[in-house]
Image (cartoon, rainbow, N blue to C red; front, side, top):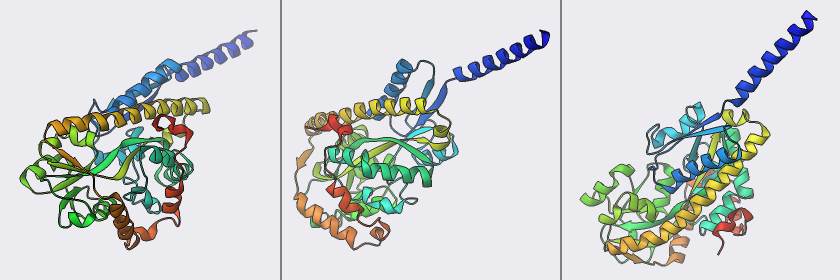
Length: 339
């Protein structure tokens, strides 16, 4: 009897220890360069609230915006080392590791936010996601909108075709893919840190920039920009990812919960970004910024020619650009962006 009691006692102690361990929340640190009031950060906070309501005490999302934990350049390595568990990345961030998916970084690769969502949350996005997991160690939880990129000019000019941007020093990030995108618009891409852009425009170190309207507003670029040329040349995406070591530690139920929460965040951010694009245009106009519409087909044709003749496109997956273009804008996951 004493032996049986001892066995029961040991079993109970083990069960209690397992129960205590299970009660510990899964801590997910999210970090990124976006300011605390940006919709992508608010979306992550909403994700945490959703998880707390649906699975109380199981998850804890810690949010570190504005580069307070890691700078933008440190996001990818921090995910890969496990210093953070959640972050947004895009095709540019992993371009050197997945050059075959270069079409996802090309100007005019997708038509609008709905098409971007349909592509990156559909079959092509799933293939890209598998490559992210296998080659980069990141598990995607869905793609969301960062914004529509247009050309912003320090001084107003008559811009109708890419030839009108010849010689224009246009700020672009330093990576090959971003520099290539600048060239595909006819401009002279100039690498410059985002934090230096306001002064660069103010002093004339650069003549132009290529950013979504909400991003330009947050940087106060409407104070040093005379004109926005609505090139609509790139629908900037963000892919919410979790580090694979963290993902592999979750059970199937937890993975499902995390994906559900990521969808809530994605839809919130998409809607807010689209609304900001419209509302902030009025703010720019009140500041004296003019908006002009160029010959989009001329820009599209010029970009296609530049990419086709470049070494950059030699490593692209065969037929991927055509598959992206042929993807219909009817993905049910993107219902919130449908007209």
